[in-house]
Image (tube, rainbow, N blue to C red; front, side, top):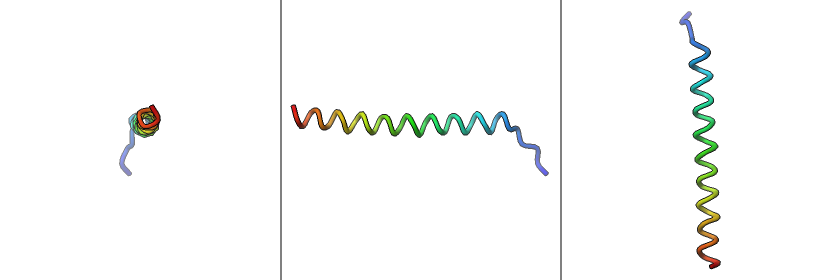
Length: 40
């Protein structure tokens, strides 16, 4: 059995979740900006 560093694994998971959340927020902001430009 390979020894797994659970601290490293948890840090990687947190970083991945933050990246996914950031990408979603960026997409939503981009859509809102596009709607604002179109309606302006």
